[in-house]
Amino acid sequence: MNGSYALLALVFAAGLIMSCGGGAGGGSNTGNSTYTLSGTVSGAVPQGVTITLSGAGAGTTTTSAGGAYSFTGLSNGYYTVTATRANYKFTPASQVVPVNYANAAAANIVSENAYSVSGTVADGAAAPTAGVTMTLTGSGIASSLTATTNASASSNYTFNGLSTGDYTVTPGKNSYYDAGLHTLTTYSFSPANQPVTITNANLPSVNFVTTATTTNAYGVSGKIISGSKSLTTAPFILEGVSLSLIQLNASQPFILITTSDATGNYAFNGVPNGDYEVVPTTFHTGSCPFPIYYDFSSPGYQLVTVNGANSTVADIIENVSRGSCAIPL
Image 1 (cartoon, rainbow, N blue to C red):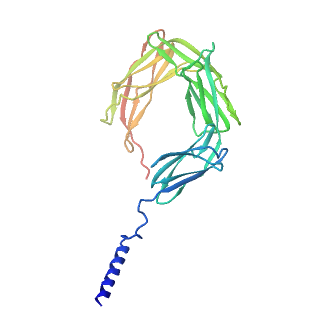
Image 2 (image 1 turned 90 degrees about the vertical axis):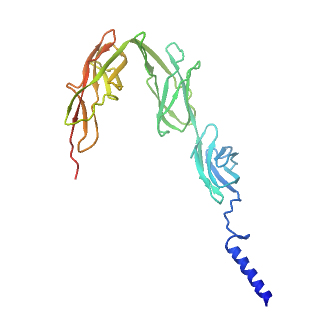
Image 3 (image 1 turned 45 degrees about the vertical axis):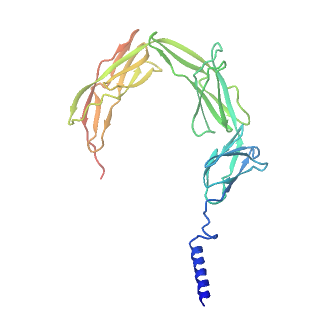
């Protein structure tokens, strides 16, 4: 009889251990297992695509004839899968795949042929022109791409990884002002831009010619000063005021924009001879019902003439007033 009680107690204790997960049949998330991450590449080139794994682990493999790939022996974590092969583009370009106590499958990667648009920028004497910013826009890209010509013997530029479609290539280069020589060098391009169409090949000869034009130019400076206040004790704000310099009586007016410093001083550099107006931009602070308005004494601008020397603009007077506005019910 005592033996029966002892056996019953032993069975009860074993069951208690098993129910608490202490035996061989305990919880399955032991953290000791490894898993497989797999996926496929389809489209123009399923085979021979390099698949790179990063994140919680690292590795590289190549897709099979059918576009399949896999990584084994992975622990739990987040992994980034990236597909690459020269002259092709992939969608998605990369993706994050979680491994969480089970094998994981990445979304299918679609491959397509990728092409390039390239060319050179040279001056009229066929000398290379470095530092030109080339901008590409078109149907095959979400937003404009930019590339800068290099300083090599040919001043090449290249846009890679492009889909078939219509694009426009536009060159540009910032003007250069030499304060010591009082000269301004500007750059124009022929053609101003080039529309191109990619069908099933690279476009290697989208070339441009640039012309540099140097003219006499000077500095124009001035100051914003405090004026009057109306119904407010708000401070004057002399720093950060936007000002525009606009050439008068010109079919293609010369325009510059600058901002004032902490004491209200401002300057425009590289201004050719001519007649101009300097226009400050009004602004406000605060919100309804009582915003604070900052404007400038009539006429709201100052005239200045540049004629072979630096020029100083008459003071621009800033005024501050409390406004009002209705609040919708």
